Length: 428
Image: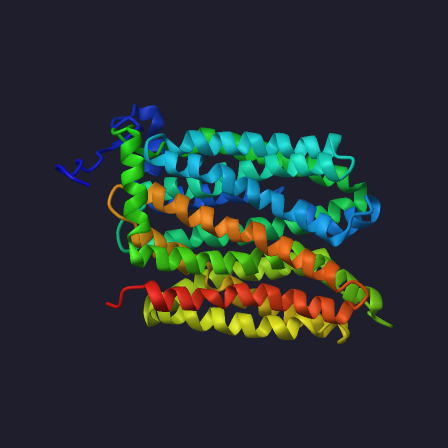
């Protein structure tokens, strides 16, 4: 653009610079980035209590509401589609507005959506609307929380703090799967959604009372947002990680949407299973293992080089997906073990990709970078589960082939990530 470049935004901390003696505990929080990180991780886990409730109970809804696989795919995908619609406004807005306020709004919407599902969902269309609202809530929780964390954690350890936060997504997802399965068995699926809504309200209260405000820019003009957007799109380093993240999200959320149904069918056709974890317990464990896998993957990247390590993890994950898909008739314990290995690989690059995007963000444009990162990532998360459902319907009546091709569909998307890193990332 012609003319003098716009001045860099001035970051303003909305938290008072001086606090009265009675607020010593808040002063301590402001001075300790690790404590802020742990608080935001706890908020994230509570806010994601309803994230996997539908996916955990998918076999129940397919049977109760007589859904096709494509309809089930839509109900899984619309959650991430709503996220894509909402996240550009909510996340890019954190460069100009306090990310804490946006986070609180996201938590409130999430609580209302879960409670509404418990009370009013009766079939495909009502569930579709409520799932859309749940996706909007995720847009107000995940990336604004990450932006808030970035505002209070600078320096060489920022990558580690980011890895804690992104890995906590797996912890929250694991908890959501486990809670949904256990409450459903004891009280029914409506109580599972009600519990998720109540826990999200607890996270909202905790955030309001303990988390400090974020930093914002004094420039509120639309041209600044456009300037940041073009800066991000022209940043090859950032875009390499963003596109690789989209490939990762295609695979990850396809797995999260369909793994319970896959395990349930595998268990159903077994002659003898014996004492074994339920499908929801297995998927909860897969996501729980993802917590150390994600943090450990980031630590490996810090030592061995991020781009090379991520490429190896993603290619290995894509190959393993084929084996998982065609393991349907193996002994159930083998299927579970393969699923655990696959989950470790799928989640092993998650924190590293997000940390790479955060570290590569142009000056003054971290919120915009996260908006692009999240929009493309969850756009892929919308398409992946839907594509998987379509593949299952196209091969209906040939279960072994259908599930094999479904997992190949998941892995094929992931295999594009190393290509993006190879072609776009600047060599140092």
